[in-house]
Every structure is written in C-alpha cells, then in structure tokens.
Image (cartoon, helix red, strand yellow):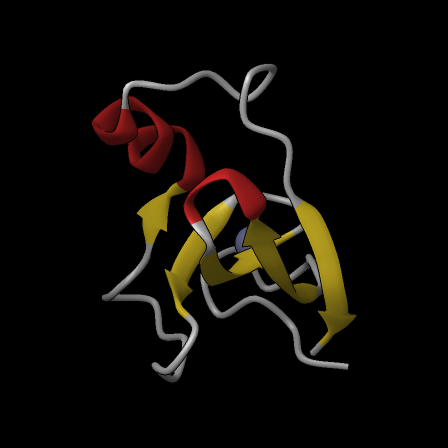
Length: 70
Ligand SMILES: [Zn+2]
C-alpha cells in the first residue's frame, strides 16, 4: 500500500471520475489528488475539492469510483 506523501497517513487510491473519464490518484484521508501518470509528492498535489471547483462540480454531483488501492 502506498501512503500519501502529503498527510503521511492516508492510503492512495486510483479513482475515476466517470463523468469526465478522468482518472487520478487520490488520498483517501486528506483528499489530495495527483495526475494518474505522476509520482505523488508533497509539492505537486491539488485538493480534490479544488479540482471539482474548476470543473464546476460538487462532490455530490460528481461521484467517483475507486479502481484500485495503490
Ligand atoms: Zn493524504
């Protein structure tokens, strides 16, 4: 299991926001996200909520599914 480099607690998951066919790496604990192709680091995360804000969505309207634990 990979541990989030930001909060050093949460497990990293590969999740898919099906509405956008967007796949990202996400921390289950602090909701930091990274591009699916990048190596997670403390410097490069964005908040999942910010990503949704940019897309004009809320978490309720934008369900995502966990593809696998990293
Ligand atoms: Zn985290």
